[in-house]
Length: 98
Image 1 (tube, helix red, strand yellow):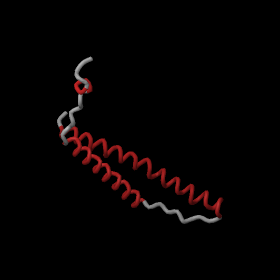
Image 2: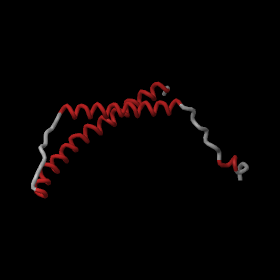
Image 3: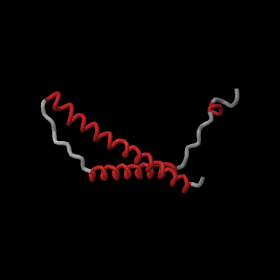
Image 4: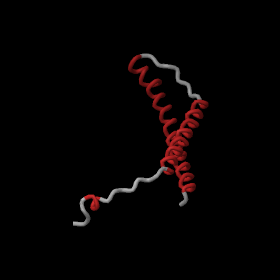
């Protein structure tokens, strides 16, 4: 694969990974908040907080996760374009074959 193809593949994988994590984590976080605020607080402390779901906030979080995915892809691409270190041979440092 060419470097351009590898960079495109890394970008795609980073976006898919962060997007999937966002789509799983956001509903889970809202559900946990609902359980803690709406169910446990009244039972444990006798009070609760108003719980509202804001779809605009979900969209902002999804866009933020995708931006983080792009940043990850950019960092990986920069690392990919760097000069790779040549691994040292262990037997050369010790005087050749034994």
